Length: 519
Image (cartoon, rainbow, N blue to C red):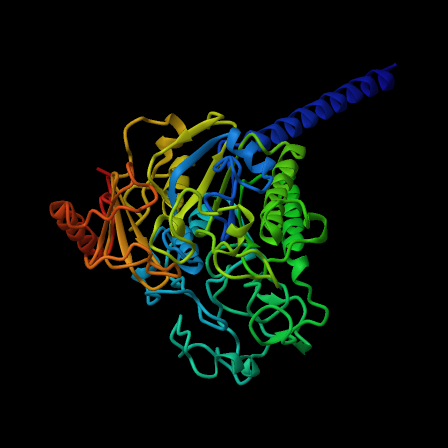
């Protein structure tokens, strides 16, 4: 009887312990899915226009059902801008909260084999999030430079000026690189725990990189008939497989985070619809805007896959999803994986609608971009805002959303989290600076936009030529920038000129920068 009594009590205790373990485990899983800190995903399209999405342009020739749905689940911005009208400076701005023209890159982008643009001691978005307990990953196009290891030691680009398009012998620099060695200065140095991508799809080396190593070392040279710059390539490299590969890697990464205790940050810079315009076979013919439209449709499909895996793993409700573009569209039709600037408009589709200009320009078509932010747990659905927003603001805004003091930390990034959480009717941001591929500046304040120069500052021809030395537009009345009011409002020109000069000279544009109390 004593043995039976003790055994019964021992079994009872073990059963209670088992229930406690199950309860604690269940709470832990529930805590993961409803973590106080949200997961964060930034999906950055490459060369996507303001008028490409149906939710921004009812006349779009491209089906974008997943992006339409994403916009319906959160907030859509109608007055958001990339900090530059080309890609490298925008990527720098998103990850640092600082305008890239404050660095050595005063115009254009980084070119093949250039060294890193992000300074080693610069605070970055992934570094900040890691300090707050996040796991961080970058999957996709980097285009912010690397330290390429030399065959005889050191790095081959230490003494090369960044962004020098006319550098003699640039296309031959790869001969001095040891591709078997770790690459320095890339995403890992910028604060990411993990990286997978192909750096830039139209630059060598044509191979995937994981963390700081080439997955396969190039064994041949890219054929002249294949799109892209010259240089080494892995045999069988297929440009149409790049987007599917990075999409699958992103989906797998998100799925793996389901059981992790820490929240995650995924920076997912796409390679589409930038040249090479290379839609996968399953998307060809799915739009009425040629290969370009098909590639945009593939972008939409990729967004759908990201949302789907978040739903399947129970992470969607507490995940902030940001979707935007690094600049406007060059409006190429996709012929031979490119096409002439503006050529897709012949198909009845205008990627810049209703704006003037294209990628590279200082006009709105160069830098006004779609921006959708969704966070089902906190951001109300079906909201549209005309608040002025710069993609530099993502750093401070995300910092504010996760409950970290942000206001004084960033030179050119302001915290607009209140826009997302309460959608105030009064303007939150007072001004914004724009920058073109050739280094032309503009400044926006309220409805007024002052451009410090003639023409587009980029690729578009000026069909409204005048003898005045600058441009002034009232965007509330003239969003298409057709009526230059420079001569009619000299006092506004003077005010905006002075404001632009002050922000350039003092090294910051955030009115709270350096004020530790944020006041």
